[in-house]
Image 1 (spheres, one colour):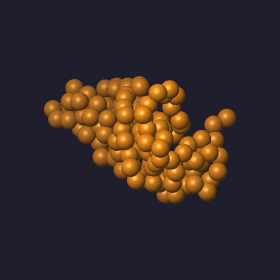
Image 2 (cartoon, helix red, strand yellow):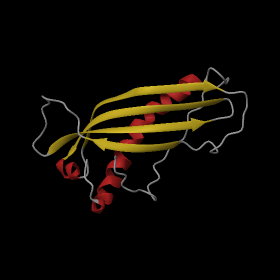
Image 3 (cartoon, helix red, strand yellow):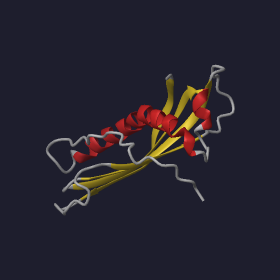
Image 4 (tube, rainbow, N blue to C red):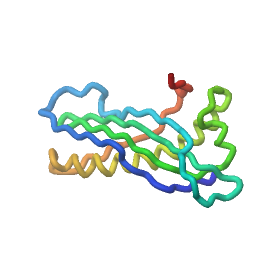
Length: 144
């Protein structure tokens, strides 16, 4: 799978200090990912490529802080993934898994860097969350 990264940006970022309160999710980052087609009028693509936008919301807790972010990226991918974006058909879940496995780590890396930087404000060391893609419960969610 060819994957080109045009941009990865933080759209929203929240960091809150805590006073050693209980954690609700055992340090496990929680996230979702959405795919769509960007509106970029003039971009030079190969004939077998399309552009997609991927947006993820990631939340992470520690005893001393809570952080969350919305991270968006624009990527060029093989045209075969074009049917996945915006489709209401659940038969493409394998392609969605493949796309998510390639794109999520790129989006998560941006979140990890920001979290590490801000975590040093409440710790004497940086806390960089470990993140992995868990797709066993993957399902298509239609926006209404």
